[in-house]
Length: 55
Image 1 (cartoon, rainbow, N blue to C red):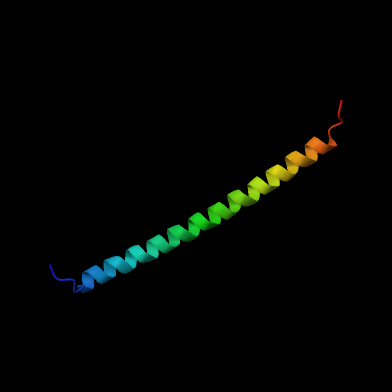
Image 2 (cartoon, one colour):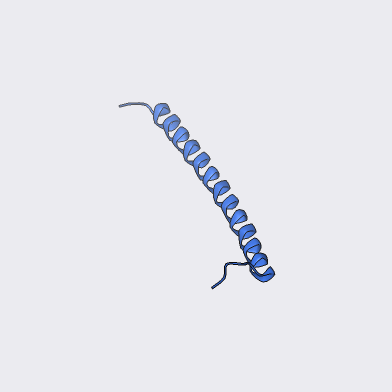
């Protein structure tokens, strides 16, 4: 089996490369959003806990 790329293979690889790049970017953005939400949630929880009168 020769390893020379046919134009078809090159086009297929380029298409999949672009798809994986987009998928990676989407996952990074989703991860950043989740991290930001987690930090906001933790901060809100701490504020509520500290504002609640201790009995």
